Length: 236
Image (cartoon, rainbow, N blue to C red; front, side):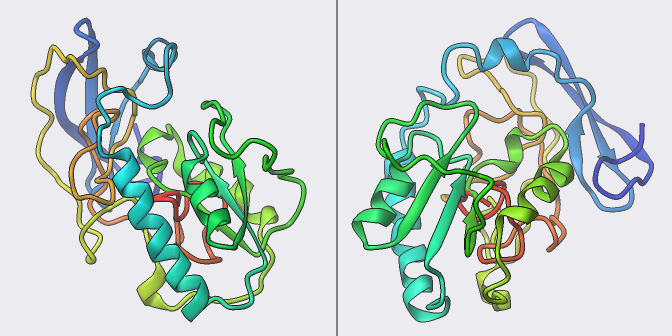
């Protein structure tokens, strides 16, 4: 099987038990280091109850941190941004926090109920100055097409500086864990087919334990370049 990012050759990387009964086979690209699950056939079952894992106890703190960080960037660097889309916005907490700070953010998430940003759902046919996307990449079976679909939603209002480029990884160098997946019977069901570190630097309980080594810059950028919610929300 070829790599879903660069098309390079892949090799076996490990196996683990998902949801206590499904065997997940991990592959690693020899060229770019991308690690993914070969056939995540359990996703519908894993997401059946809630898109956000109940064990994700740090979700509010991460959203507070992200709102402060993005608010500072908008006031310092992206002053021309008037409208923004948070793609993969989860419960809408980040959108609500950004609106409370005076920014016109809109919510979109096909897999989660909007609890905090009611009335501010996005019309994704409308162009936006900025698209953010946080903690989304690890949930995508095929990331690049997802981001490409976001591109038309963004107006070219600005070009983000290199310091603003962001994925769901915590460290500034973008390096994520490369440990082989451990065998788990799992009280926390792994849902994703590729996993990366969330902004707090810990592996999200909703992921399957595999990740990219160093995501290409074209993937997601905290500013205007990577648009679809797989971009800066810790979106995308």
